[in-house]
Length: 284
Ligand SMILES: NC(=O)c1ccc[n+]([C@@H]2O[C@H](COP(=O)([O-])OP(=O)(O)OC[C@H]3O[C@@H](n4cnc5c(N)ncnc54)[C@H](O)[C@@H]3O)[C@@H](O)[C@H]2O)c1
Image 1: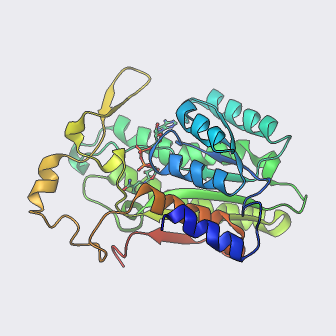
Image 2: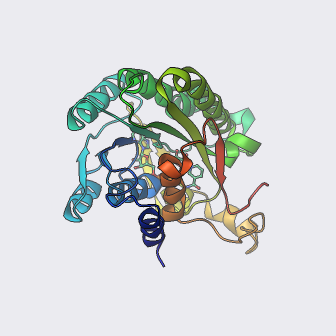
């Protein structure tokens, strides 16, 4: 049975005939592909309207009866953040209920070779941008209309445990756990906003595909950052690359997104300020 069918069944069982997120407006950054795209699809299945990054994902949601718009841009650009929040609020008739801070990539290097640019780009992308998005959305979360409000920041086992070659990413992904808890403490008491972190282990997406596949991100100054894990790193594991995962396999983007949906849903209505690990049991 597919993950989405399983979720549909749970929703039906608990009596959410229009979906667990019916009437809610969600912003999911980085939803053009990977985990974000799956979040968009699963959220739309549960009745959410949301603001997307990519046209392809939007048209597939619309063709299955969901509602979505694309707001394309770079979360490192302050003007884009302003536009994103404004367009989401317009789309939601003045309301935004959910933010999933998911956009990002890695730019690895060992400590003694890590440049300032590498450091700041990744910290800005995974920690500063989520903060700026949440800050810009404050008027839509600091409200008392009795409707649910949820912020989910995406982290990684690299942030919880550190990872050789990822000191920049480890700082940023550790940082968002503190950001999440601060949001929960500031906006929980008067406004009922829930904030949680979802930390993934190894999920099969472009981020963890072979570097040799040639995917890259182009920075505003033209520099290209290659994406993926070098094949030789996988080969060095001698067929044991999943030895540290009790389930002995990476997760799928759908499995990762299903956990994000669960956290956003009413099933998690009393879970707040937590870091939920979605790792197949890695690094218990
Ligand atoms: N795949 C994994 O194993 C794994 C593990 C832990 C955490 N994560 C985290 O999950 C999140 C999603 O990653 P994924 O695996 O789906 O990767 P992915 O490369 O498949 O998707 C990332 C998405 O983010 C977008 N993006 C990247 N930089 C952006 C920017 N500056 N502005 C706007 N959008 C931008 C990309 O266009 C893409 O749509 C990331 O935060 C990543 O760090 C992934």
